[in-house]
Length: 329
Image 1 (cartoon, helix red, strand yellow):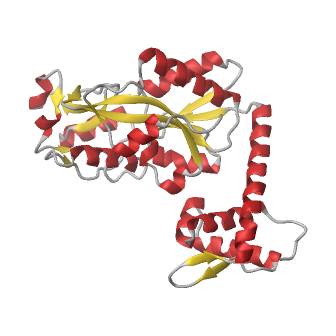
Image 2: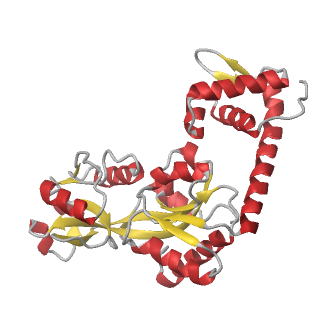
Image 3: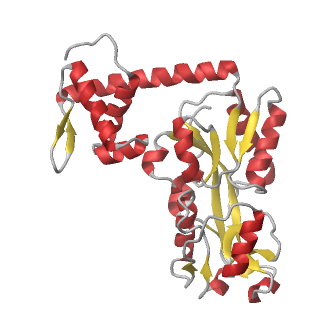
């Protein structure tokens, strides 16, 4: 293998993605680029190195011996570049952009407020875009720094570039029209929703992790997922769409109130929404340290990570939450 004077890190990133996925389509999706552009970058790297890195057939992609030899070096170069950029960002104390998903939700807002107290010299900027899947692309691309949500619900290719810290087992609730027969109850047993079509974000590309959680919860209980709806942005649109469809909406106990609706906690069992703090691998910033410290403080004082005896959560989510944090921050 010949040694060029310079290699664009973008080409190494393309090579590592294909080497780890062994599939050009999946690697392109992981990098959020077109497959044609990915193939072009890999071919350019092969020309610059004077070596064939992959054996491509119609059935599979495998590494050549030169590709196997390059892989650990490419990973080290990319890791060093990431560390350099992260250290520079930390030294400049640039603003940290934090996605709180939905205005009015308590968990992320409390963590952010406490982090601002812990790091008053840091600028921690909030945005509200809704959904961890929607945020993940921005996290990986560096357009966003931190988000909250169900980490186990992300595609493994997305999770591989992210780190997380468990925040809370948040009890779930149902939002009902105020004249719904179940609205008079202080709590709603899951069995009481049998035969209902409950809206859980079906069709929303930002929140498939939430829809998947709902699907797992509803399975075997006679509860249907309500069909997709246009994305309702803002309190007024949410209230209007709910009044029109009259479908119950799956939510969490801290979901903000809306006119014409009531929020009732779900019981028997108590379904739990697993919330993690999520950031891209290698991010170093005093604001992230403050957020992680705030999570640990509040979770300990409020018992956010204590599961109720009758709590329900998918096994994959419990493995993530009980496994603790990843990354040193």
